[in-house]
Every structure is written in C-alpha cells, then in structure tokens.
Length: 371
Image (cartoon, rainbow, N blue to C red; front, side, top):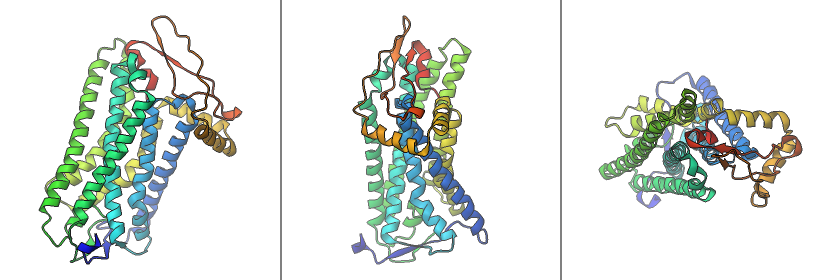
C-alpha cells in the first residue's frame, strides 16, 4: 500500500462541536464500553456454562456476544485515548486496519442477524423438523460462512479505499477511519471506489434485510394461525428482541452509507450509536426479555464460586466431545423430544443442572427457543 502514497499517518479530528466536553464524553464512552464488554462476556459465559442453553438460538446469541465484544474494540480505545488528551494521530496501517475490521465485523453482523432470523423461522414455522434442520453441523457451517463472508466484505472495501494515493491533507473528519471520511482525502479520482463501496455495502445490507423481512413475514403468518392468545403473545415475544436489535443495526447503515449527501455531525452521532451504545444494549435487550438466560445467569451467579466457574468453562471446552449420550426423554403421545446439543456433568456439583429436555408439538414448539 505504501508504494502508492506519501501519507504516513492521519489525524483524527474527533467528535465535532464537543470542545470543553472531552472529560464528560470520555466517562460516558468508558462506561458504555465497559458495559458492552462485561455484559457480553457475562452472556457468553452463561451460555457456555449452562447446558440448558446449548441450543441453536443460544449458539447464535453467543456469536452475537462475541461480535459485540470485538466491534466496539475496533475504534473505542483510540477514541477514548484521544478524549483523554493523548495523540490524535493514527498510522496509515492503523487507519487501514480500522476500515478493514470495522467493515468485516459490520458485514458479519448483517449475515449473523440474517441467520438468526432463519433460525426463528425454522423454530416457529417448522417446529417438528427444527432439530433436524438446525443440526449442530448446519449451525456451525452457517456461523463459519457468516464470519468468512464478513472477512471478504471488509477485505474488498479496505483494498478499494487504500489502493488510492493519499498525498494531501491528512485530517480525518471523524473519530475513527471510515470510508466517507477517508475517501475525501484521496488525491485521485474516487468515483469508482465510491460506487463500488456504495454498491457493496448496499447489496449486502439490502439482501440481508430482504431475507430477514421474508423470514419474519412467514413467521407472522404462522403466528396468526396459533389459536391461543397466549401462544401468539409468546411467539411475538420470541422475535421482539431480535427485531429491536435489527432496527438498531440497519438504522445507522442507512443514515451513514446509503444516503447521497454526507453530514459530518450526523455521521458522528450515528456512528457513536453504532460503535458504542448498541453493543452495550444488546445484552440488556436479550437477557431482560429472556427467561432462560435470566434463570441460567441467576444459577451461575448464586451457586458458582469464581474457581468453580472457571473450572466449569474449562471442563466444558475440554470434555465437549467426551460427554455421555443423553438419556432418552419420555414425551406424551403426539409429542416429540427436543434435547439440547450438549448435556452432561460439565459443571462442578454446586453448579450442576439436571439433564433436561423439552417436548414439542405443532406451533407451540416455538417454546424450545423462545425469548
């Protein structure tokens, strides 16, 4: 990359119109950043440590927690260092890394929400075949494709942006390196890069959104067929957390990348929401409305000492493929058993949960992974 540019570093101008408020903004961003890290680590640890949560939905929720740990870590540390009075400069390679990881994780997020919508579609619309369709192998394959797809997406955008020469002003009108702010500094024709990046981001966002919309259209039609009002309420509750997160994700994408005119102030506000606030809200969105997570979290916090908690996580990782086969679950007539993927004595005695399974029949089977 350096063969095509004389630029060695960029200067991040930070958030506009915040002079004199740096200390207060630093405290707020630090609080949201720590909340995002601790909240998502807690959700991830709860899913790993509780055998009752070893189902496809929580597998994808665990991946979302991993994403919400990585995503704010791309830009937030540098932003908070600048607010604390340290250098506002970032190296050319550091700027390119920010663009790559930001859009890699952004693409992964779009793909992951699409897969989560498909999981809800199968659980509600095809409950009798849910465990067959969403097998461990299928879920693992979908997750690998999600992360690889995000990596390809980020690689294409980073290559397009940093193949251009940068030889003029080096002040990035943002608190991190992103496509609109960096492209304006290129001393060459940027029309091709703008068109391809706009098309790439637009296609990924639009295709994922249409797939999510299709899944939830089918889900709503299936929910309307449920006879009991309680069943319909629980089914809609199952999807509400996911839909809330989708709105928080696609709103910033549309406002920043898919509108013709750019506004630095609006872009900064939206990016703060997308970078820092949304990852800190996801643990609250999913845990407060999720009875299974709240019960598992309560058991882990109340009954596990720190040493037993660490032992449980290590035991789970080491003995994942050595666990005994689960006992058959006896279900009433016309019902079929639905078991978690992994069960067994992974946890220390104070934390151990009994072998559990679920029986499902018809549309009411959405409860196997309800929120």
